[in-house]
Every structure is written in structure tokens, then in C-alpha cells.
Image 1: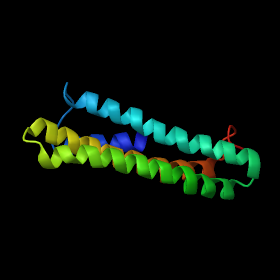
Image 2: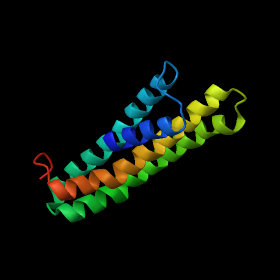
Image 3: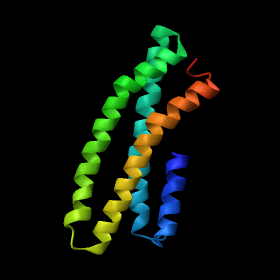
Image 4: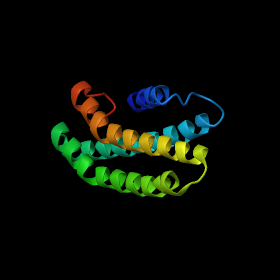
Length: 128
């Protein structure tokens, strides 16, 4: 979440969007959705660890099952939001949709790539 949020702040800085009343709700929605992705992955890792007891196999199985669900959910959400970028006549809606789409992609990628890597490197006690 921290990685994705920092990348979004960098994007808003580069595009000179700024933090205001309009962008804060968009970021809040994305953080809520992004944390769900991470929770799904971590919960699946914990469930598989109770059965397999091999961290490498556990992470691979969690990514192959829940990773597919996260990818499907993120793709569905992004497909709906990206329509605002393409078809909206209002600049605010278009910019907000682009920001939200980018955040959804980053959060899904971070949940599927960084979270398992974090688990493999640090081997947190609540997992092992």
C-alpha cells in the first residue's frame, strides 16, 4: 500500500494535479480497494500455510489461486473506470478516472508481487 500510494503521489506531482477536495476521495476509494487485494493474498497464504508448511509452495499456490481472483477483480474495476477517461466530456471526471485506474493497477501489482516477496523475505510470525 505504501509503495502504490507513494507512486500515486509522485504521479499527481508530475501531472501537477495536487491534493484537493476532488482528489482525496479518489485516493481514499483506491486505498480501500487496494488493501482488500493485500488482505485476500495474505489470508490465502495463511490458509495454505496451515496445510502445506512449505513457504515457497504456499506463496506459489496463493498467487495462482487468489492472484487470479485479484487480477479478475482489478481488471473488471479498471474496465469500468477507464470508460470515464475515454467517454467523459468533463475534465475532472476524466482526470479522476485516470488517477483511479492507475491506482488500481499499482495496488493490484503491489499485492500480487510485493506482498508475496515480503512474505518470502521476512517470513512474518503470523504466517510461519
